[in-house]
Structures are given as C-alpha cells and as structure tokens.
Amino acid sequence: MPTPLVTRQMGRLPPTSRKFPWLLAAVLPLLLASCSDEASEKTGYVPTVRVATAATVSDAVTVSGTGEVKPRVESVLSFKVSGRVIARDVGVGDRVKVGQVLARIDPTEQKADLAAAEAAIRARQATLRTAESYLNRRRTLTQTGALPQQQLDEAIQQYDSAVNDLDAAQANLASVQESLAQTELKADADGLITAVSIEPGEVVQPSSAAFKLAHDGELDAVFNVDESALTRDTPPESVEVALVDRPDIRAVAHIQEISPSVDRKLGTVRLKLSITDPPPEITLGSAIVAYAKLSEVGRISIPSQSLTSANGKPAVFVVDPATETVETRQIEVLRYDADRIIVANGLEPGDQFVVEGTQFLYPKQKVRTVQGDAQ
Image: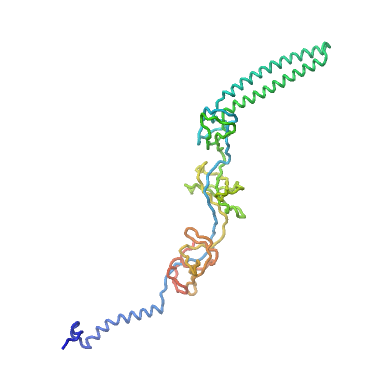
C-alpha cells in the first residue's frame, strides 16, 4: 500500500494534543501584528516638521553693475605748431607736474622765424628814431615860421607810421616767441598720463592729440547700465561702490551725470558717479562694482526649501495651530534670491509655515511641529 505524501516528507503526524502548541506559536505573532496594523491605521502616523512664523522684514531692492574709476577732469594735450618730434619724455602711467615738459618738436624753423622777427624789430626801431628826429626838426622850423604847417603834418604822419610798424613788428615777435615755446609740450596740471599718441621721429600737425592727462583730484565711476534701470520715477536711495577684487573696500557715491543718448547696440546708458572720499585702494583705473539701493519696504521672506506647489503654482504648507494639521496655500513670489524667496502675497505675519519636512505631507495631515527660524 503506498505511503501517504505527508508521511514520506514529515514522518508520522503527531497527535492533536502535540500539534496545538506548535500552531499557537506560529499564529500568535501574526495575530499580534494584525492588531498592531489596525491600531496604527486608527491612530495615524504623525510626522515631525520644522516650522517658522512669517514675519515682515526689511527688503532692500538693489541693482548692481561693473565699471571703471576715471578722473573727474581729463585733458587732451597737443602741439599748436607742426614739426617733427625729437623727444618724448614721458609714457603711459607716469606722474607729471604742471609745467613739466612732456615732448619736444624740432624748433629750427621757429628759431629762424625768431631771428627774422628780432631783425625786423631793430629795423623798425631805427626807422622810428629817424622819423622822430625828422619830426622834431620840422616842429622847430614850423614854430619859427620857416616851414608851413603842411610839412609838419607830413612829418607827423611819417612818425605815426613808424610807430605802427614797430608795434606790428613787436606783435609778430611775440607770436614767433609763442610758436617757439609751443615746440615744447608741457603739462597743464598735476596728474597721470593715461594715453600717448606720438613717437619720436613722427611729424605732428597742429592740434593732433599727443597725450591724455588725468588731473589729480576727485574721481568718478563710469558705468554702462541698462536703460530700464534708469526709468524709475524716483532716484536711488543710496549708492555704494566697491572694488571688484576687494568687495570690503567701499565708498559712498552720488549720481553726477546720465548720458542723454542710448547705445543702440548694447541698449545701455552711460552713467557717471562721483565718489565721496574714496579710500586709498580705489585709484584711477580700478575695476569697481556699484550697488544702488532703489527702495526698502517690509516683506515676508521664507527659506527656499519651504516652497512646494499646488495646482502647478508656488505654495507652502501652513500649519493650523488649533488642529495641528497642515494645508497648502498658494503664494505669489516677488523674486528669488540666493537662498530665500521674497513673498508678494499669500502669507500674513504670524502664519506658521513648514520649513523642513514638506516632502511627504498632504492636506489635512496632522503633524508635530518644532519651531525654526524664518529670518
């Protein structure tokens, strides 16, 4: 007779009195677990979240831009006479004093003109002396009646003509001397050479630029800013400038000049700021950043990790202290800063919102709260 399957695998079955304790030990944990699950479903899981209280904080609206430090006064120096440059004594970056010779052109032509002018002066002086002597003799003879008045008048005219010729010669001499002096180009102020446009051996023409000289004194910050930044009805509340490589080096600035024209290619406007009492580190040519505070108002700011979404729009989880449950509330975002969000609408001062632990929350969910920081 074939042996039953259970007998082949497990041996002879034990009596009922022996099987009951083994079954009880196996089923009891399952019964306990089922009860535990039912109890858990009835009580519900209550997550712990970090919350913060919405509060109004001062929000400064600022704009910034990079620019360069330039002199308040800058002059373009040039020769007033033409000639060949025989010497250039300074270069870009050199400091100069007022009256210092910067460059010279060949003065041979001007020296020849000076010699001719001096010779003309001597000739006119001799002619004047002769006319004066002639006039004196005519005046004496006229007084004695030996000569008529007409001849005296002629002598006076000759004398006056000689005087006028001498005056013209002296004026020409002054002009020639000025031309000779113009063969040396001198600094018109203390300052710094910022550009050089001539080289020795070059033939220059009158009024062609030779040097740019930045005058010592007040400094300006020059920027090219977006046109939209200047369309506000009110001017900035304050402006500061700082070195690009040293943001801690700062100075107060004021708007001095706004260009009336717009760069059509870049859509920017040239803006000039005057720097008040710049520190020694802010020097001519320094690259700087300007920070303009446009306004300052009270707004609610929340950490960026607080943000969630509801119906595809920005939202936060708000806690109802009475029921200790959360609800999603849509908010209107004014702007996104580096690690915070500035709220335009949707939150009121005193509202409690979830800062951390939003990943698995849902509306009407009960939570335990731990106070955080909204600042």
